[in-house]
Amino acid sequence: MRLMRPSSALLVGIVKLLVGAYARWIGTTPSATQRIYFANHTSHIDTLAIWSSLPRSLRMRTRPIAARDYWGKGLRKYIATRGFGAVLIDRAREDATVDPLEPLRASLREGDSLIIFPEGTRGATAIPARFRSGLFRLATEFPAVELIPVYLDNLHRSLPKGALLPVPMVCTVRFGAPLAPGAGEAKEVFLERARDAVIALADPGVHA
Amino acid sequence: MSSLIDAIPREFFWLFGALIGLLAVASTIGAILIRRPADEKKAASRANLVERINAWWVMVAILAVAFLLGATMTLILFALASFFALREFITLTPSRLGDRLPLALSFFVIIPAQYVLIGVERYGTFAIFIPVYAFLLLPSIAALRSDIDDFLSRSAKQQYGLMVTVYCLSHAPALLMLPLPGGPGRAALLLFYLLLIVQMSDVMQYVFGKLFGRTKIAPVVSPSKTVEGFVGGGLAATGIGAAMWWITPFTPLESAGVAAIIVIMGFLGGLTLSAVKRSLGAKDWGVMIEGHGGMLDRTDSICFAAPIFFHVVRFFFTA
Image (cartoon, rainbow over all chains, first blue to last red; front, side):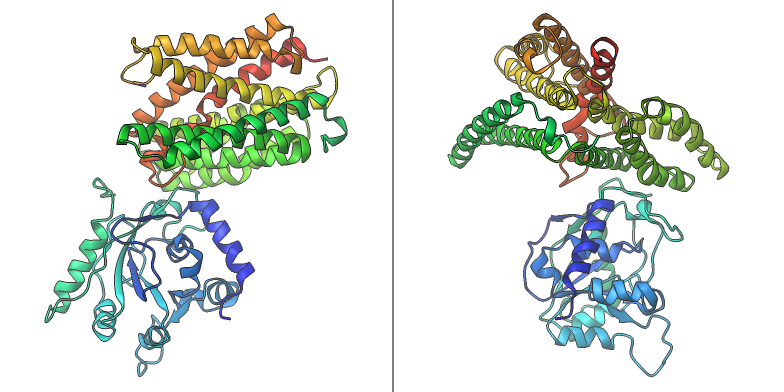
């Protein structure tokens, strides 16, 4: 039993109260298929918002990726590992000999679904920055896993980078149609296509 | 204002039993209708019917909570309604970094404080807390961040949201602190009376509008509001109000007058908040924010009717 249920339920309750995290299944439906959800990243709530928006049965098998330098100590570590079963990733590459993607591969091999943020860091705008290559590498190494683009709105207003207190705002979590790298598709081409798939889920007029 | 269980008036059991029976029948009909094949238009109006019946169940639940669990639970319920309504309003209102602290204070300090003031029966402070203190201090905090872009427009919108979703809405449960002849149980019946008239007026205006609606009152702001619907539905709701005089401190005639005030204010609330959301670029609080119920769509009439009803009762009918 990886997750402690009462703390998870409390966490989900707080997230729903603050930002709603209403799921909109636009290009796909909730499914137990092993998946990698990849989303735009603007706020510390992002991880929790996607995780909370999933049906409970899927939540138990879906693990968000969290940066070890932020979520790796004290109360945050407790919330991350006990509350939402996060996989901690060494973003700073303290040990250069270890591939930072290794813990992700281990989780995928165990059959878990993952939530990742391919920008690698939080942005300040509604439109995501360039995607890093980890998504492409995982996609080619695990071709059976579905890649689902996800767009989170309003969280850059609710709890932007540098802010301490969240302002309650209604956030929708939009799930798009799965996509996969084509045979011989170049890394850059695929990453741009994946980013466009996330942007396509944003409101037509969002350019803030 | 502890539990009201000792003071439950007998009327409560009559009302409660009758309403549960009626609603059970209505829900059964709704459940049968929605399973039947229909074209798109019919299906939409049936879904609408079921939604309205569900709103009634919520109202009956509030009534039950107000009586059985006491004033504290009622206040918590309305505080949550204010929280969700303000969250909706702020989501649609442009804000900048300088607004973050005043906004966070609105949600986490002002909402709880306003409802605690009702709980401890501090009428004097409750009545001026938001219009004086929040009005002066919140924009001052924003000004300290020296971000002047659209400053007046930003603060005005946030103040308006706070007044409607917190200050005005809080007047509904504030009825519970009025010293009425006959004890605290009477005040809870008045809260029920307010919700009943507002809902009845809404339903009746909808029905009369569908049957006889021709002349639009304000076509740009709210295409569904017609003179025929408002007059017919308003009169019907006023009649229902008069017929309910026996749960209030009013005579039948007074009850008709008070119900008419509730009808008119509720109508103006729906109209005005419709103009507000259109000016924010939304057609429906619930559609603009996909997948969300739209707390303000549900409470717009109550927000406008509650303060006036509260003051009419306080001025003319308290012991």
